[in-house]
Amino acid sequence: MTRTDSFAERRAARLAHAPAPPPVQVRRSTADGDVVHIVQGEQFVSEDPNLVIATLLGSCVAACLRDPIAKVGGMNHFLLPGSNSPRGEAEDLGIGVHAMELLVNALLSHGARRERIEAKLFGGAQVVAGLTAIGEKNASFAEDFLHREGIQHVGGSLRGDAGRRLQFWPVSGRARQVFMGSVAPELIARETRAIVVPKGEDSGELDLF
Amino acid sequence: MSKIVLTVDDSRTMRDMLRLALVDAGFEVIQAEDGVHGLEVLQGAHPHVIITDINMPRMDGYGFMQGVRSDPQHRAVPILVLTTESSAEKKLRARDAGATGWIVKPFDPQKLVDAINRVAA
Image 1 (cartoon, helix red, strand yellow):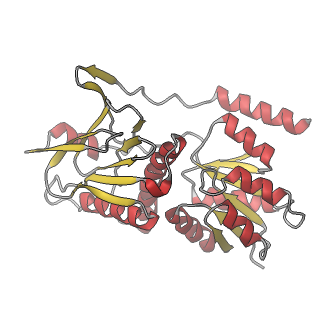
Image 2 (cartoon, chains in turn red, brown):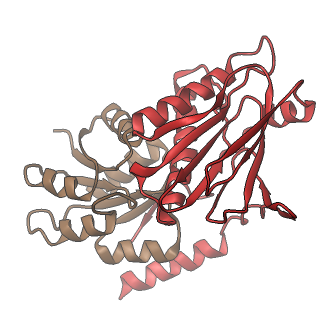
Image 3 (tube, chains in turn cyan, green):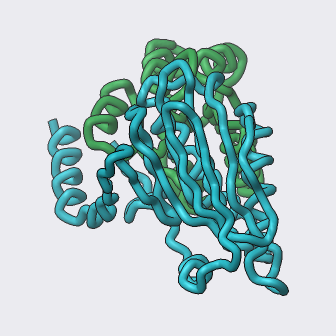
């Protein structure tokens, strides 16, 4: 009995201190269908064939995953900040792995099967000459992750020195990118400010039953 | 004598990260790729603590925990769930399946080591 009570109490206490919900993603409806824009640290998954997921990429990477049989797909958008210390390297890896795992799990919960998932990778540009090769680091991480996990890498566009406007249709798997001749200053500002790590307030904490 | 930890996760990257973190902390680590593999590994191993993911092919974390709890040899081993999920409903289901505790990814290596030492004590 006490076990049940203490669990309920702890749960109530946790709910009372629950972190604020993530910002609501804005869905714009147009004659061509709905558009959902995501930014760094976000992801979106859909089974709607008329919906398009859009984002702007500089040195960040977006992974576009879909299962052609389950007819579901989704996109994330992450940035490994490019630390040089061993501890920073491990933290970078953690950010990327977490972003990818969240997206894969979201697809699985919509009926996708891991072995059927097809991935396209975009981004990882070297947008500021002279800075450390953050784009390269992000591109390599994403390629290595797919390889290690046995997820099919079927296309996309990585590296280069131009930012990208990306659109992805999660059900058909179609992707369209437009290079931005010169990267918008606000995009660079957004990517180089403090990194938003997508994790909950109590991530990593032990919750005993 | 170092404590033995069994980790069960279908992601190779996650297995590598867990192995690095736990070996660094002095644990002996054995690993499985899903629930079915985890139960097979337990035929010949006696870990002090088990860490398992929830979303896995063939047999998920709930089925794996039920299998462990119905095995007289391992029914008392502490099991920590390590997952991206955080819903109260899934936590309750895990508790009912025999979980000892729940940790939401991404994991912090030191906090994970502390959690293992706490439930293994």
